[in-house]
Amino acid sequence: MWIVVSIALPYKLEKRLREECERRMCSEEEIVIEALSKMLDEALDPNDMAEFHLGLSEKYLDEAEEFLRKGDYVQASEKARAQHPSLSGP
Image (cartoon, rainbow, N blue to C red; front, side, top):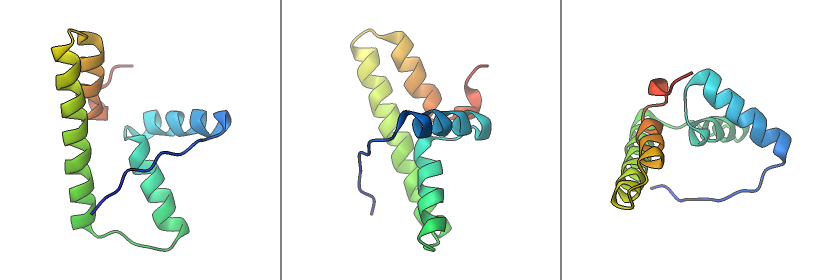
């Protein structure tokens, strides 16, 4: 089971998080989960991570579909690409 949490970050950390996401071609959520897992010494099994990735993909797909309904094709494209960060352009 997963919950959604919203956090406030200092600008410097948010900037570094974005840079790391681009470097590793992954989502912000993945980096935060990995960092918390290591810091709290709480390993996540492959089934947990598979469930996480499925939920994240569904979230981005739902958001992309909503932007398509609104006619915002640029945002729809961004959300669709978020499902697979390695497809993002330079």
